[in-house]
Length: 382
Image 1 (cartoon, one colour):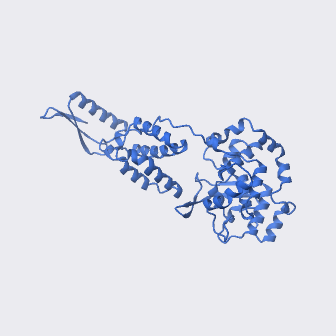
Image 2 (image 1 turned 45 degrees about the horizontal axis):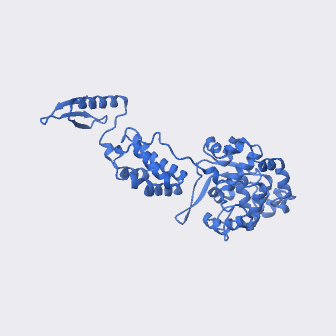
Image 3 (image 1 turned 90 degrees about the vertical axis):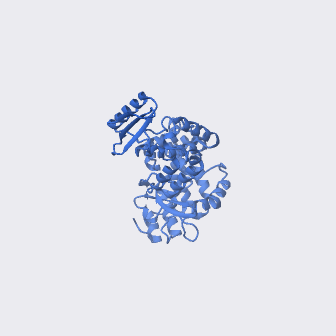
């Protein structure tokens, strides 16, 4: 139990022990304040929410460094992003502050300042990193409650940045690429793989007889080096392939054999570096196909969702195909497609089959069976 004793100087000293048995003391000018503090300490200990006042004296910067060093199970790209948010936006504001001194009002003011100069998505990502650190500090018993509760964030405007390509536009974009990358464009638009997942695709992950690909890894470039890691959501999924794409991939793998084991490779057989591909191939192809200047590679993934929606797929099916962590992510990004399809998408649903046949991506393969292609190219059957 906490004890209160009056000191020779007239102040009141409260002596108490932490749940770990460490002796602590606090001093007050008024007896009523000392009594209130002692009662609060004992009540917090009983409820299991006691926080040692000395713990909160740790600076945010020192704790953030310890927190970051403990995040070993993250992708290399994620670590780079976290380090960037800390150094650019978080540590300059809170690095020298004591953990216990950071209040919700401080966080609200900081978010408001960031919202003026950064995109909503960047503000959200930065706040989430800061919130994770403060939540961990709460779990570690350094603060009684995270100051990040109830903080309003700016609305994201990601829907305005999306471009949805029609079936014909996907074909035009693919045709504008070198033959080496034509199959990659069709694969991405009809499977919805992320760029890193597409370039990480290995030959053994492709099963042409079952018409599936197993999405297990992601390839990214970190500080000039290619790094293989898990997918964004750290989950594995199997994605089905349309018949024309099976035939196209069979021909592609026969034409461009890969000693490195990747389905899609740069000239010479090395893995594809996405930045180089975008500058040397994708951007020129977008211009040649007369598509929107701001079209991104990721818009092929969005186009996959739109094409599937036009064919009648439900949100859960699209979530599983795209590898979203939750159905909410799918609905947040593509929910507007389910409320009422654009006329072009509806037209695509009624005539999709006819369009693909009339503009077959591999017309010379239209009458050739997959097994014949595999046997001709000497590829494995499974």
